[in-house]
Image (cartoon, rainbow, N blue to C red):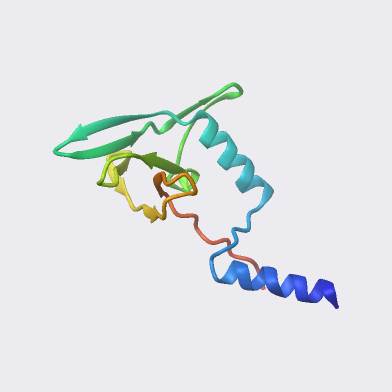
Length: 118
């Protein structure tokens, strides 16, 4: 009985967007990308633009990133205007996060919701 209630609570948290559910492969990819990502910042007309390098260089080799590889990444900023993120010459849609417990502001590239077979 308790297991059923617990699973129902997890399901409700997931469906409300409060709980991120991942696969092992997705989590490992996120760790690899967030650890080895390279980017530059450009200040232009009171805006900051984060330009993500599409080439990922890791100790086990190099590969080209896709937009899907970038989901979940978070960037902190200190200015009053959130930065824009550019990847392969295109602006990426981001989510503005509420300040964290240290009052730091951040933006994230939203996760795509996993689809499960019926």
